[in-house]
Image 1 (cartoon, rainbow, N blue to C red):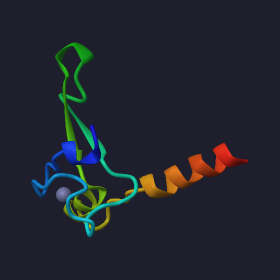
Image 2: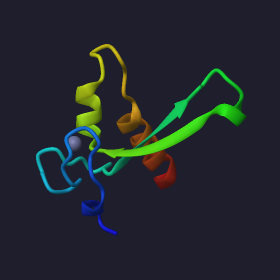
Image 3: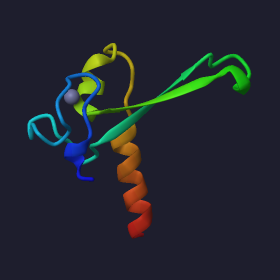
Image 4: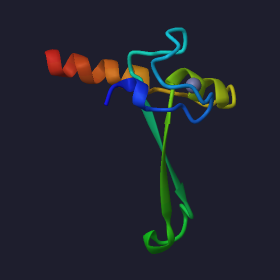
Amino acid sequence: MGVRGYQCCFCGEGIGEDQGKFNLLDPCSIILIANWEKSESVQAEQQFFAHLSCFKNTLWKNVPVEVEELVRDLEQEKNS
Ligand SMILES: [Zn+2]
């Protein structure tokens, strides 16, 4: 399945349809865990897909998103 098989949960578009929104790290997945402070037996998870740009635009301005730097670090480690 190509990146077009994923629908962004924020904008509703297929990921890869709009080059302006597309990031080389897409598609991104977001995992929501309900009941986070309770025991794992009553937690529930749901996975979403999104453009990284839509996710970043949805967050409050002071929330850091560090995945781009982290991926860069991983690639540097792999190549060293
Ligand atoms: Zn989107």
